[in-house]
Structures are given as C-alpha cells and as structure tokens.
Length: 313
Image (cartoon, one colour):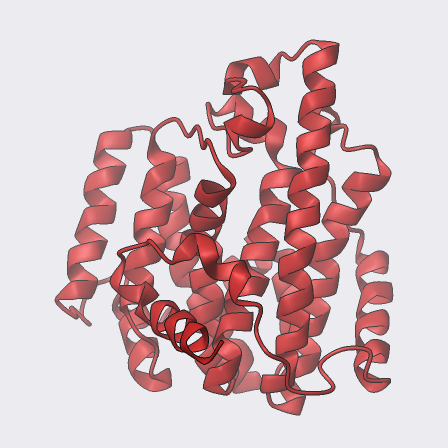
C-alpha cells in the first residue's frame, strides 16, 4: 500500500476529499487508494513531456494488470485493492485506454464519442467504486452514470484549458467542427456557438446526475451521504458555469469551502426527506445506448445488463 493513500486526494481531488469525510475510515481509505491509482494514470498522460514515452508507460501498466503483477511499484496496490473488494481489474485497463486517448490531440465528433470517452475515464471509476461502497449489483449502472455526469462537468469546466492543450472534447457536430485552436482564439460568433454547446453538455450531464442520485438507493445508508455530497458539490460546478453564461474563456470555475459545506447540508437534508433514492428505480437503458458497441472487456457487465433489459421489454 502507498505510505499515505490520502495524500494525492488531498492535493488534487479537493471535492472528493471533502466527500470522503462522510465515509467510514476503512471505506474512505479504500476510496483514496483507488483515487491514487487513477491519479497515477492521469499524471503519466498529462505531465510527461514525451508523449511516446508516456504511451509506453501506460502500455506497461496495461500489461502489468493483465498479468496481475502485484509486485509492480505503480499498480501493485491497485491489484491488491481489486482482490480485497472483488473489483474487476479489467476496469483499470479501460481507464488506461481512455486516458491514453489524451496523449495526442483530441477532436471528438459526436455525442456518442463523448459519452464513450466519459465512460472510459470516469464512468468506469464509478464501476470500481461501487463494490468499495458496498453497492448492490443493481446499483452499478447508476454508479457509471454518476461518473459520466462528473466527467461531462469536467469537460464543460475545462474547455479553454483543454483547447490550449490541443484537445477538443465538445463534439465537433455541435460547433461546426471548430478546432481546439479556434476555440482558444474564438471570434464572438464562434464563442456563442461554444457557449451553447456547453449548455447542451451540462444538460446531458444533468441526465446522468439524476440517474446517479437515484442509484443511491442501492448503497448502504452510511455511504449514501458521501456520494450525495460528492454529486452535489461536483454538479454545482456546472450550475455555477451556467450562471456565468458559460463564459469559458474566463477561467476555471471553483466551489469555495463554505459553499461546499452548504451543498453538503443540502445533500444530507434531501437524503433525510427522501427527495431522491427513496425507492428502487428502473435504470434508463437509453443512457447507455452509446456504450453498447464498445468492445472492451470491462463493458461486459453493461452489455449483459442492457441486453437483459431489452429482452424484458
């Protein structure tokens, strides 16, 4: 295990670290360990000055997971975590595959592509968190949705930052295929197109948040609080962006510590009065329509679940 599994979370994942305070000690530590693995993968892609070398490093991690190399210095603890919580380690491979797409210039074209990307880099993290949180298997799909919603919020928040790195996640079909450079130095009329696309992106994110919150029903009572708080805090980033007319060129949107406390109180109050997660709900299979054609082994759960639902219709 890492010397201090919470160090990376405290430094880089302040919103998630805040939510972790509502988890029990063991569960919170396991969540921090999972975050540590995800951060290692992200940092290889984002911080390496040599993209080809980063690709080799990620491929090495990929093979180490396939071969279950528990002695590996970077992913040994992740493999141990998978063993402890019965996490499918192929989900870690999907994360690596998704993050690897960021090594070179991104230019997504369709809504299907952005949902698939969000699944690979965040929905799959929800899938890995679900057993750590003690979720019932019926709740795994909702965990995927919460991850996707959070990633879509990330993309909406970081449009300018990503554009400066040569990345365009907003589907090209939404903005007349503007390039990352054109987004970074957009004219007024192009800025308006991008603002409208961000609104559309956040509307899509809201659909996934609503599903994710409904899925809290499948979590043990003690862990519902933490995930509700995380969802409320992260969703507020998008809502604040909307209040600012999605002026993406103004820089990142942040949630202050005081506002996080207010949002936590709201989330806990809504749980108490059963505003959401009060009963079992049927998952909206259309939210995973864009994932059906994916061939990754870690999507098997989604494939089987969607197909089973279709047979009952």
